Amino acid sequence: MINWILQQLHSLPSVWVYLLVAFLVFGEAALFIGFVIPGETAVIVGGVIASQGRVNIVGLSVAVVLAAIIGDSVGYAIGKRYGSQILELKILRKRRAALDRALEGLRKRGPVYVIAGRFTAFLRAVMPGLAGISKMHYRRFLIANAIGGLLWGAGFTMIGFLAGHALHRIEKAASWVGIVLLVLFASFVTFHHIRSKRREAREETEWEVTHPD
Image 1 (cartoon, one colour):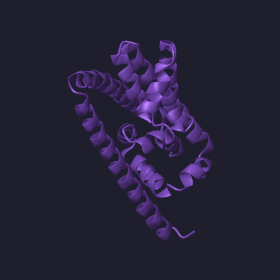
Image 2 (tube, one colour):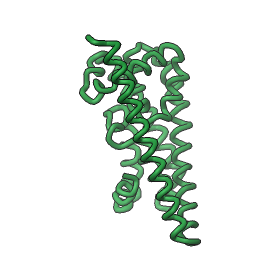
Image 3 (cartoon, one colour):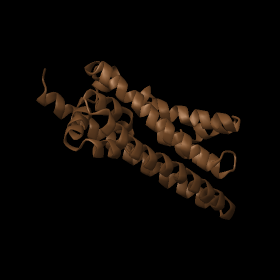
Image 4 (cartoon, helix red, strand yellow):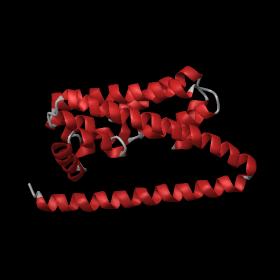
């Protein structure tokens, strides 16, 4: 997926790189596209492109942070306005156990949970809406959202930027090293994805047993 997004962004003028990355980050929670393309993937790819000098790293970071904060605010408003109807979306009905845990986390830890959720793909997509559903005061949400958006947005943009420089040096030193690292990284991501899916399936089964209605 990263390679595909990288290819698409490379074919665009620089201004469209800013706009597309910002849109994907904005839409992750506001439009629920995070279930298809995680926002951090677009941010990391944007950082890689910035390392090549095609876009400015500071400008990209600002665009990402603002898009994250605004997108989550829209997601919060949707959750507050439509409430339980959001939970009935087909894409969410299969993850009721995870949603229940997230709502419980919001009730217990509030803003801290909002910040922490920014660094998990599933929670990043649903947390703003759940915060609205839970009736968290918007000012508390906005502060936590801004802190999380700043840390996540600037952090992952810089990760992509530094990774771009590192990969460029690796490719110059020895192409096989880059291949080995790529294989190891892909193996880790695949293992983590399969383990997460199995855990989610087990938790959903347990939830259905305890909630027969």
